[in-house]
Image (cartoon, rainbow, N blue to C red; front, side):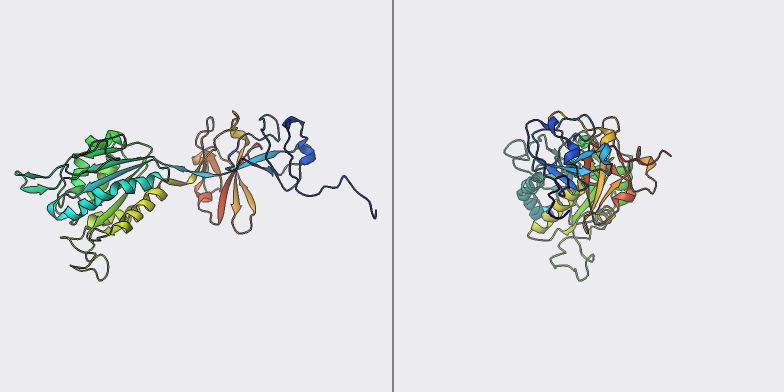
Length: 392
């Protein structure tokens, strides 16, 4: 009818007003097939349409249509998914033969800054350093060693030799030109209790030589595979700060990339195999070295397919049967709800997800097929019945 003021016509997406009594809201009247946005003082969990958790950094909530009819409206609260971040255990093994004096000085001056920058990324870190803590000569081996002393705050006290702390342990064993890997293997008993089973381990070898006739990369990888209590269940990344003579085209003696005795090929092999950093020990400015290490350590701590369930507000509980994982296309904004499977063994080739523990969930984990999808972001939704794959 021309000129009719039709009060019952919906006017598109609706903003829910802030009210003191949330129970007085008739969600059916506020429901629309689009997205609802609100900033209510609180939301009580309970029946259909109730939000059960909040993860929005701005304090707001986004309420989403779960694809149900108006007779059974479900309003879900969505939260940005944040990756699980592993702790990191960083193990430096430093050649302390006399030719390493300049490199040792740089490490003593810069290691605290390196750790501070990692800490700014909110990583839970520990540092192990394998190397002499004082200058000495071993008459039996006929070798001279240079001491390494890391100042506070990584060290637990001022002065030299440095002091172990909650985040730092110095394995006070001299490392010479060829035996860095041997010292890591043979002294494992002295640092294994400092390692954590849920941490990813980063080894950083610093040497201007190769492994000579001592333990090589194959020996070290065998050690990694068999070490226990805790061993290295989260895997490891190996980084090489070594002489690169002949490794880079045009790199010869007296160039900035070669200053030592031999190319550290065995170290380089493991860095290539594990995605580690390969840098020249011959650089006078180690800014690039530490920047590359920091980036690798920080990025490596993020589990790309595992997402933390958000912190709960107002004593609300996340319900395992009212949680969904949504893929959002970065190209057109379209939303796809992934079905849930019981556990990782149910994934197969399905683009799906599962809980780390269905009874007490803390993480949502994507199956491999879903994790490999590109041009998408992840969002978690709470409050609507979980979309599941049919029982197989």
